[in-house]
Image 1 (tube, rainbow, N blue to C red):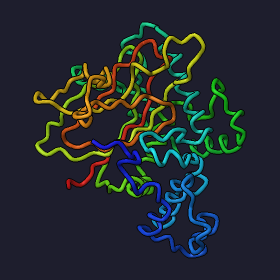
Image 2: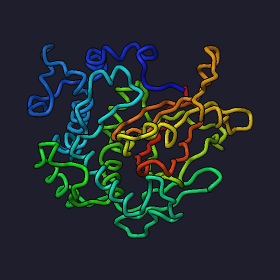
Image 3: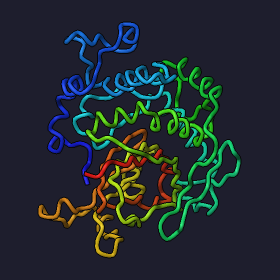
Length: 352
């Protein structure tokens, strides 16, 4: 298992601009570069780290002839802190503030309507819906997992344009505060489905992942999940196939993680986290050890110690796991303020 990418594990990451220049053809025509990329012929205009994602995605979109425009990409992906690229466990504030706020407003409204979180006893069918515009389906079997998967339609292009227009007009982040009514599509499922289809499933995003991580995905599967407080979880188990592939996990998480006065503990510190652990002989793993974050592990077994990735709002986590690594999401406590929502993507990698 490899968390992407601590500096000790990926020594080349601090040299990203030069590495990308050598690995990638930036020589576009002047027309393609205009308003899209910095001047590729000037050393003074090497793309800085905090723009590497956006510029790379835009570059790839223009080369492939896709219809996604600069403004559409810019509306989804926020500028990245250069320091985050050197410690690549989790990329915080991943989507722009406007998009993150729209998703935050929609998810809070859904949790409030379903009476979830804040210690409330949840209804077993909370969040179930068969409406095509907001269709959530329970996933099982219960001895392995329970959560809701969005199976409704992604928003139509006209809805996205309307939403994008509203968000673009709100250039001051303070005009898109939590609690305000977001523009259509207001369903959290439809909002996250748009992120799923327009961003993480796009060839441009896969190209960026390849450049960022040094691995080249050969396929993928993705889903939009809702793990409800007091109800949902996934359990660690090994793949049943004889030769399971190596996986790059990309999980874009959303949750209410703001600490408030009077909190006994930080939100999401003891539940709803994603955990990676080595499989043992029975193919199940020591979940109890994982729950305690491997506190008793020694230097000799650090590689086998469970790794926890806490739920954080608007945060992308990247993890490469091999065939002997399992993962699970810890049961979400009813004391959390709401659900854990995420876009969960598994990219298959070629076996070494």
